Image 1 (cartoon, rainbow, N blue to C red):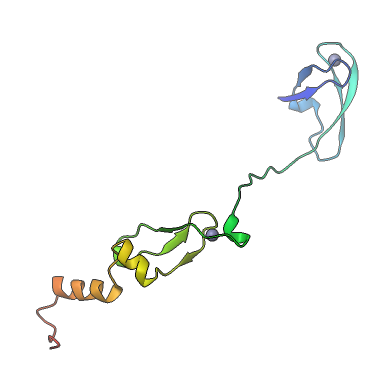
Image 2 (image 1 turned 90 degrees about the horizontal axis):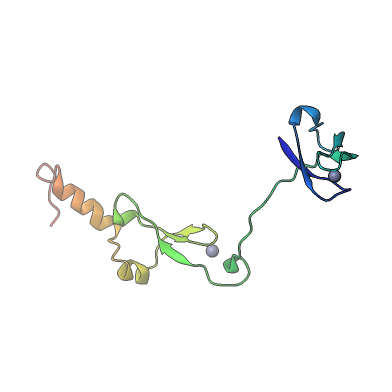
Length: 121
Ligand SMILES: [Zn+2]
Ligand SMILES: [Zn+2]
């Protein structure tokens, strides 16, 4: 079912898609259910875009947010506006309490298999 506005009476009329030529730019003859006049309907398929501001793409500041990862050591900073990702800076690591990857690996080694490895001291 498609709803088409009648150019004569201005009311919308429902037309079964079987009676319409749905190819882009092709004409169909439609009879208005309200005023019974006939008119031509042309299919026009539009792709709709949603748009939103991304100031960081226009000399503005990125809105960096820490990503949530399986382990905090792998946290990246992602811009909530444009989706760009980068490594956190040392200041951000401190602010968001992100451990370094070396600390993470050290922790892993300590947790499993640490006993088998030679300890570096
Ligand atoms: Zn009409
Ligand atoms: Zn951005």
